[in-house]
Amino acid sequence: MFEVLLISISNPLLVGIYENKQLIKTYELDGKVSDTLDKTFFIIFENYKISSMYYVNTPGSYMSIKLSYIFLKTLSIVKDIELYSCSGFLFNQNSPIKALGKKYFFNKKGSIKVDFLEKDTKLHNFELPSVLDRINFSSNTLPIYNLPVV
Image (cartoon, rainbow, N blue to C red; front, side):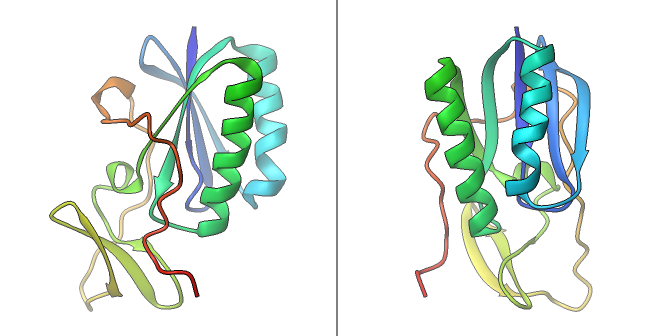
């Protein structure tokens, strides 16, 4: 059985296929979540028997998180596949994540704060982990938005 990890809060979107918790295939998708997920997952489901899916449910683009959740939750229900979620900070070395305008999300001792970048702040790209079982995933898959509704 295979597992899928989706990081959709940045560009390029990253999708990893894992066998026995080891990364075996990577997809880097340029474009919007709404334009790329269905085509990519169609290919994935043609080639792999998926037993579980994982995605980043916080923080980041509201639209990307919402679309990813709806898409994966639907697949989870229809195909009877387990769905899990986790924080995006686990995949970019705990680097700030773009929020809105010139503001960024910061992970401060397990609490997410929104602020401007300091002058010398180094940003890291998102990366798929080579081993999936080292990540702390949650079965609570609802999106976490971190900002009040405007």
